[in-house]
Image 1 (cartoon, one colour):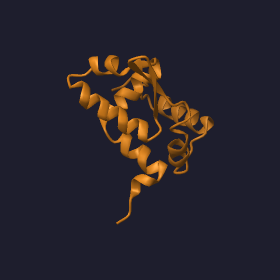
Image 2 (image 1 turned 60 degrees about the vertical axis):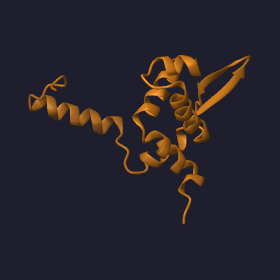
Image 3 (image 1 turned 180 degrees about the vertical axis):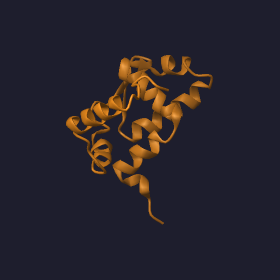
Length: 115
């Protein structure tokens, strides 16, 4: 049996597959937080949030630093670089191309704010 989680890219995507973990990363993008601060924003147990943080830490997306009795969670700044490079390999649209698409849509009367 192949252990896909030995590959850093597979581990990162596995960690990102859960919406709670993606939300935690978004929070940590804004500021460092203690495990308790993260847990306080969810309607789940501290143990459940700790498990999510362990998955993110094993994937290298989050770093936990012990300060006294608390663990401070920090987003790893370059953790998603490999995933980003892999996704970009499927297609890159230069700004000039996107500007042209925007111009064409405006010419057709399609609003940018249409939802």
